[in-house]
Figure 1 (cartoon, rainbow, N blue to C red):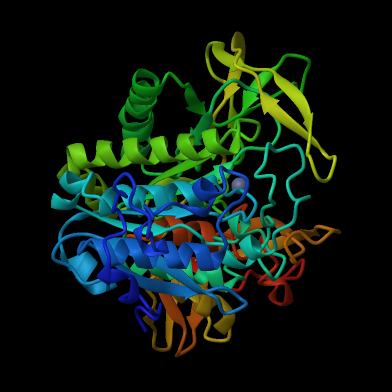
Figure 2: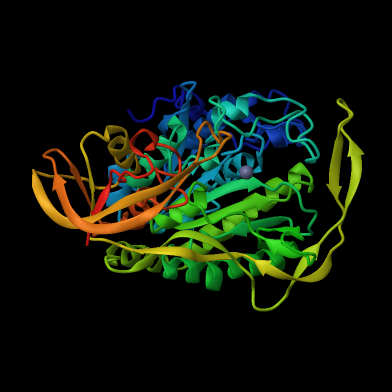
Length: 529
Ligand SMILES: [Zn+2]
C-alpha cells in the first residue's frame, strides 16, 4: 500500500539543479532549477495537487534520503503524498519507528486556502535535496505532507479568502470535499483525511508535529504567530519545552537572521469587557495541535500573517519550520526522552480537565500591532489588505492558556458495550488500545443523566450535545464482548477526553451517542476505579 506515485524514476536521469552556462541555449525543462509553482509564477499562483506530486517526485529522484509514499486518501480518492526523509530507512512506518531516530511530521494545507505551508515545505525538501540540510539526516526522520486537504486545494477560485493578500491567481477552499473543516475533525474523525492522519500518528509515531496555516482577522505586526497545544491536559513537560525553550529560541533566531517578529497566536479583542486583550483560539482537541498534545506529542501550530505578501508568508512558514527542525536536531535524544516519559506516566487517580476556559495573564504584555493598506485585486476588484511595515507595542492582557473549569478523576478504565460498534471503530481509528472482556460483574461508576442540551444548529454536520448529571457507584454488569479501555496506556489523555460524558470534545459532545442518551437514563459507557 506504500508509494503508488508513478513516474518517480523518470526525472532521475538528469540533475535538475543544473545551472545553465552563459550562452548555452538548448535547455530542456529538466535542466531548469527546480522551482515551486509559486516561485515560477512570481507568487501569482500556488501549487496544484499535480504540481506538488511532480515536485516531490523530482526531489526524491535527486537525493537518496528522500523517498515517497502515501498515507491515506481524501474523500475524492486523492492519495495523500508523504515524503519520508531519512538515511538508511525505508519509507514505511515500521522502518521509521524502528530507526530509533527522532521523527518530525510537517504538514501544510489543512485549510485549502492557506497555502504558504504547502509552498514552504516543497522549498524545505529542495534544500534537503541540494544537500544543504545533511546534518539533519544523522538523527532525524522528517515526514513531510505538504498538501493534507488536497481536495480543498483543487477547488481554487480567485474569490476564496477575501482580504488576504494573494495569491492573486487563486487558492483553494477551507473545507474538504465533504464540507468538513479538517481542523475540527480530529476527535470525531468523520473524514478520511482525519482518519489517515490519526493512523499516521499511530503507525509512524512522530515525536513532533507542525501544522502550517494562515491567519484571519487581526491586523498585528507579526509575520507569523504560533501556538503550542492549549488543552490543560497536555503533558506539562511538553508545554514547558515549547513555551520555555523551543518557541523562544525559534523567535530569537528568526529575529536575528531575518529581522521579523513571531509571537504566540492571538486576536486583539475587547471580548467580555471594554479592555483590549490578546486572545488565543481554543483549547479543544478537535484542533490539530491540541489533539497532538493529548497524544503526548510535541505540536506546533504556525499561522503566517494573512496580509503579508504571499511570498513573505511562504518565507515566514519556511523559516519557522527550518528553526523548529534545527532546534530538534540540537538534542534529538532529549525530545525522544520527553515523549517517552509522557507515554510512561500513569494518569490513573489524577484529576484531569473535562472542560476548560482561558486564563488571563498576570501582567499586561506588549503586543505588536500593525497597519494595512487597502488594495484591489486586479481581476476581481475585491478588497485585499497589505501589511505596512510598521509596528506599535500595545500593552494588553493575554489570554493564551486554558485551565480546567471541570475535572474528573482518571479511572483504571472504561467499559464499552459491544453494541457501541461505531464508538469502538473510532477508538481504533485513533489508535487507542482496546481489550476484549468476558462476562463479569464489577464495582464501578455509571453516569446518571439529568439533562441533555442539544445545539439547534448543526456544526460540522453534527448537533453538539451537553449532558449533565452525576456519577453513582454501583455494580456494572459486563456482557461478554464488551471492551475495556485501560487508562494505563500512552493514549490515556486522549481516551479520557473522548469517553468522559462531560468532555467538551468527546463522543457525547459530538452527538455520536445521541441514540443511547435520554434524561433519566444512564450513559452507556461506565468506568472502574
Ligand atoms: Zn487555518
